[in-house]
Amino acid sequence: MEQLEYVRKNLEALGERDRLEVLRQTPEALEELFPRLDMRRGCELTHWTAGEIYCHLADLEIGYGFRIRQALAGAEQAQAFDHDRWGIRYRNYESYSAKLALDAFCGLRRWNLELLRNLKPQDWEKVAYHPQRGPETIAFIVKMLAGHDLRHLKELEYIAGYVEAG
Image 1 (tube, one colour):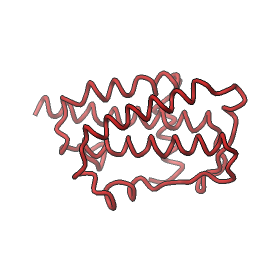
Image 2 (cartoon, helix red, strand yellow):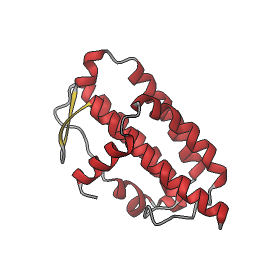
Image 3 (cartoon, helix red, strand yellow):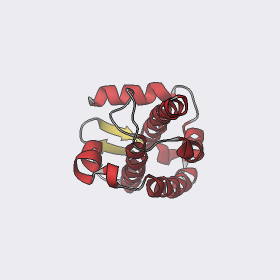
């Protein structure tokens, strides 16, 4: 997906919601959805299966957490990552445990939220330079992450509804 389109979709999904509240609620939502899902099923909203989405979210939590830490440390350029290369093409998510991905995500999210809760007001304006999108403040990065959560939760809810109806 083109970078500007990716940014637009994430920010649009978040809207006016509180970014930290979304981040706090996502693990619980993922845990509630988990038993209702066939992890091998996808839908027309995404090119990934439910299990692949759980793996993707765990990997992305690593990536975004690292990017935030790079900004706090004053890195000149943040490390970008290609979610397709991290996932389907090279890591074969379909063979990974979605339950392990969920557990990893929940632990990493709690750890990242602990970091975010302890930021000073001026820390939110520290910048990470994304190789494709340019300078991004921590405040912006967290908005992107929260919107990303909501987009994938919507996909999982759709898959869960399809499984229950199907």
